[in-house]
Image (cartoon, rainbow, N blue to C red; front, side, top):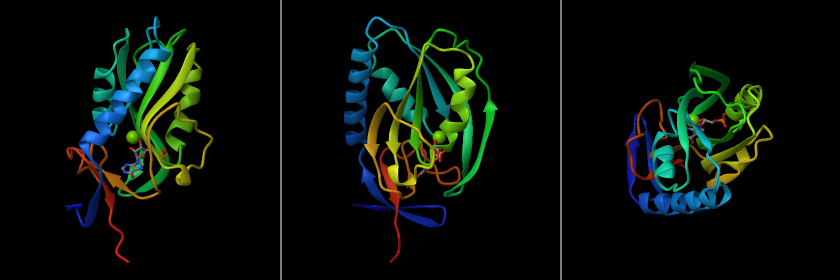
Length: 180
Ligand code: IMP
Ligand code: MG
C-alpha cells in the first residue's frame, strides 16, 4: 500500500475509492428501501461530508431533498471539544423525515450537540448516515443508523476528510502512519 505525505505527517492507504463507492451504493439501496414512498430531507454536515453526500445522494432513486450545514470541532488531528456552527439551517424541519449525513462519527460530540437543535423543530424522524465510525473513540450516546465502515481509532484523511485543510481531494482514504 502506498504512503503519502500531508503537511508534516505520513499516511498509508486504508480504503480504496472502489471499496468506498461499492459500500455507498449498498447504503443507498438500504435507504431507498427504507424510505420508499417518503420524501426525506438530507442534511449534509460540511465540510468533511461533501464527497460522501454527493455519492450517497446519487445512489438514491426515491424523492429526496438535500441541504447543508457547517459544523466543526476539529483543529489539526485532535478534537477541540467545541462545536461551532457557521452556516445555519434555512429549511423547515417540521414533520420531515431527516437523514443527517456525516463523514465520520468520532467522539460523537458534534452530533450530540447538534441533535437537540434539530429535535426542537419537531421533525417526524431523524436518522444518521455516516461513512465512517470509530467506536473506540465514542464518548456520547450516538447511534449511526446507516454506516459505511467501522474503523480503528486512528486519524484518517481523504475522500473529504482533511488534516488541517489538506487531503480532502484524495479519492482513497488514508490512515495516519504511526512510527513505532
Ligand atoms: P466528533 O464530534 O468527535 O464525532 O467528530 C466529528 C468530526 O470530526 C467529523 O465530522 C470530522 O469532520 C472530524 N474528524 C473526526 N475524526 C477524523 C479523522 O480521522 N480525520 C479527519 N477528520 C476527522
Ligand atoms: Mg465533519
